[in-house]
Length: 120
Image 1 (tube, helix red, strand yellow):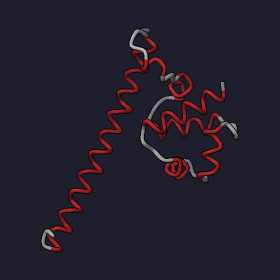
Image 2 (cartoon, rainbow, N blue to C red):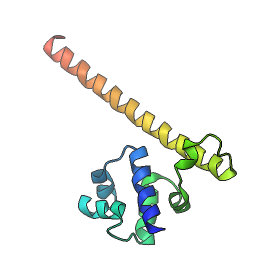
Image 3 (cartoon, rainbow, N blue to C red):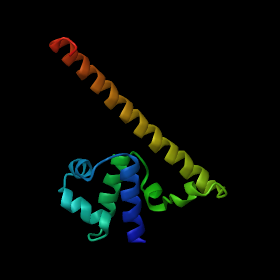
Image 4 (cartoon, one colour):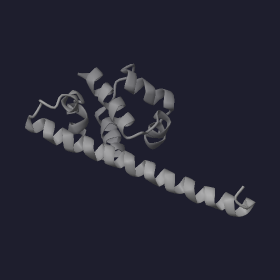
């Protein structure tokens, strides 16, 4: 069960487009220490799992029960899959919003440089 939780943490982090370094900073630990959690080389305490859930903005139960395979097979139609589908849609929506903000910031910076250097 612990390896599944570790795999779920890694999958959710990747879906959120967070780096291990970002997670480590948010959890007040080293990147190497965080990496050990994902690899299952270090056990994760319930308190740390609560902190990880807070970073992901989700409930600990959703991390424990997360199963991406339900999203890969459209024939899987249980109510649990529907709830997870909603959570996955939220993750993707968050990821898209983050990328859009990054593009807007990049466009603003590009315009600053165009104005500064005459639009070379």
